[in-house]
Image 1 (cartoon, each protein chain N blue to C red):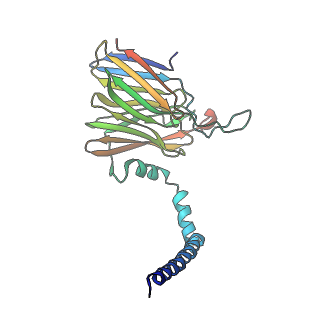
Image 2: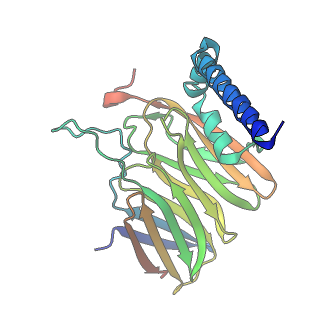
Image 3: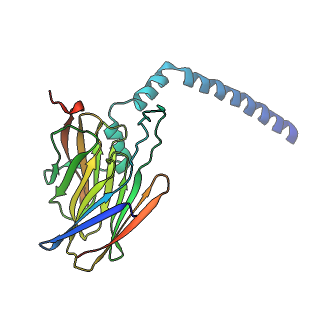
Length: 103
Length: 158
């Protein structure tokens, strides 16, 4: 199952894009409660949103973003049937992407 | 003087110069003044300014009232503080969010195409009470606004 959940809502000529990504977003300063060892940093570094294959958002994110990040953006226009693609890459090289059709 | 003599003289000189520079270098390392300067540079409390310098080089950043930041004034849980940034500036190219007191201030920077409204919501981790600064880049330069957040540990307000 994809780690990205996408919701869109069209409202007076704009489209709200909301996303929820399942990711630990560890900043590398937390300690494991049992072993007291540092938990290695593990966070999303790049977030890309494409609208009909055009990149509309190129984001760099750091570990100051909360666990299981939530982002919302507002697209000018946007029609039913338009395709959104959201993808992320983290500092360990993991990545995921998810398509969404605006309804 | 023959060619080889010349060469020897040169080598002698260069060796002498080399050892001199090593001594000089050692002196510099040991000098307390240089050490103090280094300490001031690396342990400066103004981490935000350094982060801004790294991110935006020496660009001029102007305070603007056309950026609105919606963030709770007090947060009970610093691990997830909702923030919404919007702006009435024209031709916004990017929005960056920084948390001043966090060890690494930059939280996120989003580059926007012209198809997007200058609007972003996210959730931040804020380690301690701190200012949250937003830097908006437009084709006319950089603009900033900031908002203070008080983080109350254990969820009890004093």
